Image (cartoon, rainbow, N blue to C red; front, side, top):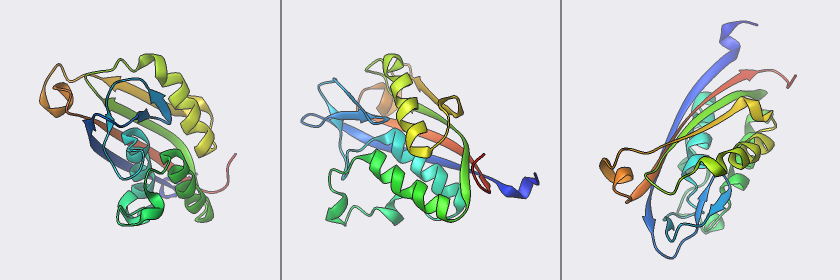
Length: 165
């Protein structure tokens, strides 16, 4: 398969932690006492993945598709937003090859939740779980993620032209 059938995209997202919101990461509600502030459910992991997929397809970013000025997306489930992006990508004859992502958070400890995050992402992207990597790192108490002010995520997606196989 020619290399020009493959495309790669990088995504990044960050949200502030606040009281009175649920913490949702990878579609999983995590008891934390604080949650991420945002127009939707503020799932930084899914938002970074969305941006990486949109970047690979050169279709813009999450704000292009789901602007925070549109009240239809207020408190939206980010997995539903990802599903809409996947539908667009499939209509353009792209498929997801794999996704590699990382969550930057001092706390809570995320390793117990990662298997279910991977399962959620794989299901929506219509790929096998082994094609989805989710990692979590602390920042050794450095910066806004290290001091507990927020959580960030990066993602890289590899896509290719053609049907799923």
